[in-house]
Image (cartoon, rainbow, N blue to C red; front, side, top):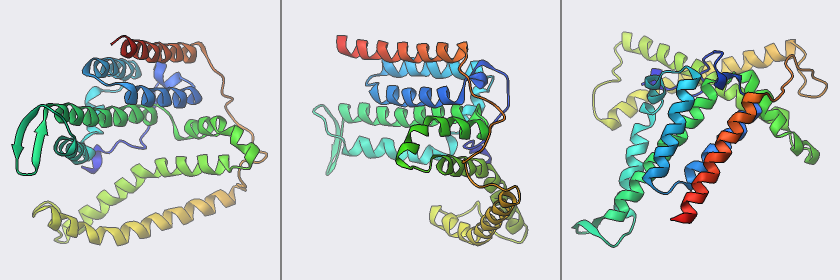
Length: 267
C-alpha cells in the first residue's frame, strides 16, 4: 500500500509536459480543477478522460502507474460514493427499505462525486510527477509574488509546501523500513479486522515521529550552514520564461473550458 502512494514523487523526463513552465502548470491545474467542477454529465467526464489520457501519454508516464495513485484512497472514493447514494435526494425511487432510500438521481450524483474525486487526484498527481520540487517552488513563488505587496511570506510558504511534498516519499520509505523491522520482531500488520490493523499501526507512530523530527532538525542545520536567510537577495540559477509549448497548452485548456461552458448553455 505504501508503495502505491505517488504524491510528492517526481519522474525526470524531457517530454512536452515536463518542459511546460511550472507557472503555466499551476495555472493549467487550476483550470483543470475548475473544469472538473463544471462538468455535470458523463459526456463532460469523457472529455476530461480524453484530456487526461492525452496528457499522460504525452508525458511518457505509464497509465498503470497513474492509476496506482488511486489505490491508497480507494476507501475514500467508495465512502464518498455510498454516502452520496444513500443521502442524496431524488424523485425516481429504485430501492427503499426503512430509512434507506436509493433513487436514480442519487446514483447519478454519487457517481459524479466519485468520478470528480478520481479526476482531481489524477490531475494533481500529473503535476507533481512531471515537475521537480525546485521548479515547483520557483513557479509557486512567482505566481504568488503579488501577495508580497501585503507582506505575505510568499517565499517561506512556497518553501514549506515544497519541502512537505519532497519529504512524503522519504517518510513513506522510513515507514516501510520500520514496519519491516517490527514485522521481523513478531509484529502483525496484515491480519485481523480494520480496528485491529489500526491498533497495530500505533507503535509505528513514535519511531516515525522521532525520525521526522530528526530529519527536520538536520535539514534546518544544513540550511543554516549554507547561510539560508529566506528569499531576500536570492538569485536564481534558472530563469523562468514562457515558451511556445506553454501557450499551446493554455490555448488547449481554454478551448476545452469554453467548449464545456458552451455545451452546457446549449443543453
